[in-house]
Amino acid sequence: MKICRILKDSDPRYASSEGGSLRLFPKDWLPGMELPKADGISIAAEKVEAFLPPVDPSKIVCVGRNYAAHALELNNPLPVEPLLFLKAPSAVISEGDAISLPSQSRQVEHEGELGIVIGRRCKAVPIDEDPLDYVLGFVCVNDVTARDLQKRDGQFTRAKSFDTFFPVSRFIETDASVSDLALKVIVNGETRQEGRTKDMIFDIPFLIRYISNHMTLLPGDLIATGTPSGVSKLNAGDVCAVEIESIGMLSNPVRD
Ligand code: MG
Image (tube, rainbow, N blue to C red):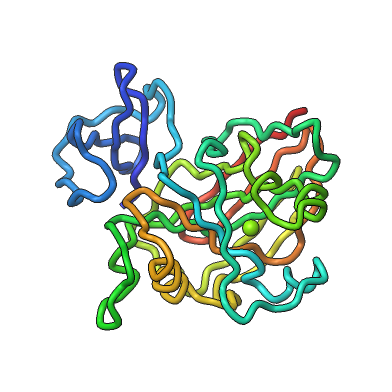
């Protein structure tokens, strides 16, 4: 199933996508509730007032240096345990919204990543439970980064949290198997990043369990699982696309 969030009569509503149309979920449905049966009102996708980011997360947990080739391209050692940092939820934008280059940085870079959407409250996943049972689905995300500020600050908060620095794809894909998917970032039609999710140093079940042992994950929270090699500078006028096999596509223009 593909789940999206739209504006309907000026209110946010969840819906599933089937072919060219959307089926509305009940008004009060939120991530964390049981998925409703597909008996809601159907509306044509082109009649939607606006597509919203698919979730409104309480937090965005990012994993740094989770692909060896990317750690090495930035002259960083390989991590012996996941390197976690938080990104401000106010950075989230939708498919098609512009990434704004802030005046404070001269080196803003794309980081295409597989995003995990949490579907159930998740605290210290017990050893006999599958961490994937806590997942609602997967999205394409772009962990946009002011690389010069990241290097200058020695920590990531400012460099990662400017408004518009977290584009999220329109649909949450609930049925994909994500252990070995192709991931690409294409800027102005040119492939810049290419990798496979099987090359993550710490895989998705490990990451969910690990993070849940440090902080409680809530329904709608996002985990960005790290980026493969090939990060590069974004310039005003660029169009940056993240494509992940079986998950979808995320495309955003870049503006000053
Ligand atoms: Mg990243």
